[in-house]
Image (cartoon, rainbow, N blue to C red; front, side, top):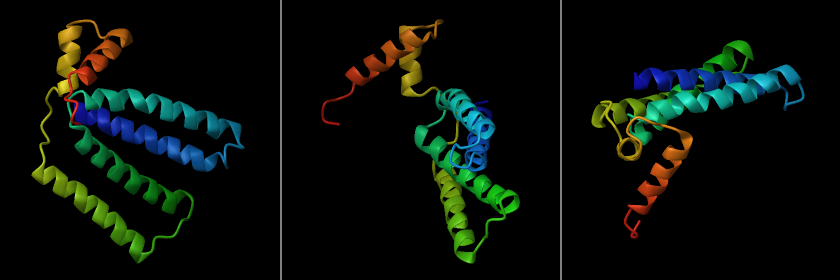
Length: 145
């Protein structure tokens, strides 16, 4: 389910980026409002995905898929050019994410921050308790970091 949350976040972020382009520097109201809305809403599924996915892996997938989708939409919708060097760069990004997935841990599991939240607030996940849990997490880290 965490991967579904991540892909929803990616779609929302890509929609926001397209709206940013359509807003013409935030000079057009409707695309500007949708841009803010999509970016704002995209934080929730991202946060849900990060409850069980490693942040590095999630961010790598998010950035690679988002970059690829925005590039393809730019070509189709905005008639942006695709050069061989752009194609090669996208290929390198995608190859890097595939390699991370092959050598990394793709399984969903509670992360350390999730376990702290569950310890502090076993059934209640209010923003106040989550904030307290994150403060507790940062106070348990070693000072050498």
